[in-house]
Image 1 (cartoon, rainbow, N blue to C red):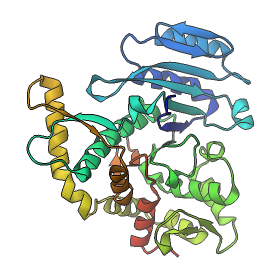
Image 2 (cartoon, helix red, strand yellow; image 1 turned 30 degrees about the vertical axis):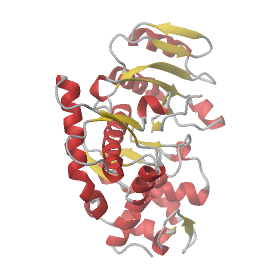
Image 3 (tube, rainbow, N blue to C red; image 1 turned 90 degrees about the vertical axis):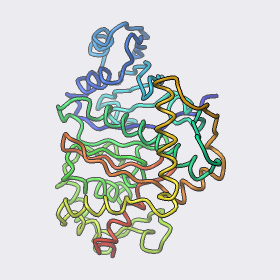
Image 4 (spheres, rainbow, N blue to C red; image 1 turned 90 degrees about the horizontal axis):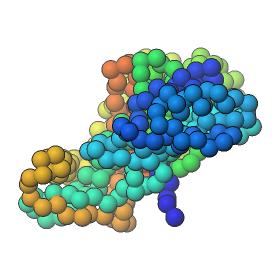
Length: 348
């Protein structure tokens, strides 16, 4: 039985959802790939235009668009993925997310098995874990951006990725996308409203930052939500902390997140050799020349323990003006947020 890959989610206004689906499909599909279209009937399309014509003719009411096709990953790899586009009526009944994307299996996207060129020197679990994280995060960030921002339209203001199957609080996800970097506080406000008021994230993700702030302000003074933090200051998030973060200059919040994303000593110690291995492995794949590669499994307890104990974080500013926060799918973004809020003196 195939173990599902990570889940990707994106929010979009209903009138623009099929246009967003069209742009995403064009950005992801592998050349020559067939497209399975499942709606009230099943179809096989040989082009993006044909698939979209089928979807546009049947989308709406209780009918969602479900497309399956092969997409391109780095290194000429391909992965089979599903994209679903849900109508507002369907979302009101069963909230999944206006747009969702799932690789068919971990072995296609979140693989823990690699052929690596070690070069000289002994093997190291720490180095192998860093190598795997670098490769996985490269694919994860690339797919999230191509899913949420396939063009310059800005139709999708926010999206996220998780190792699970549901769209949870953004700070509990492994990656988030925001079309406007200056609205990075949306992740925090959306998380707090979801956890405090129990609203489905997919139903409130499209709210303006001002509306989310008003929802936080409407809560009782001193209200807290429980967080999965390891330190005492990171085990809860208060209404007051969220409001202070939203009142802070966005540049200060982004700078604090960037500083908090710096790797710890254990990660820095393993990173140079890991980078050299990744570069050499890619060179061999491109040229067919170089030392032999060796199969490496990075799903052992030791590898996973290292990643969870020393989670990698990326804060990536996009040329479009957006921003991506990301970590390994086995981890969450909350430690990054907790450290950034603490550094700014906002944790109450």
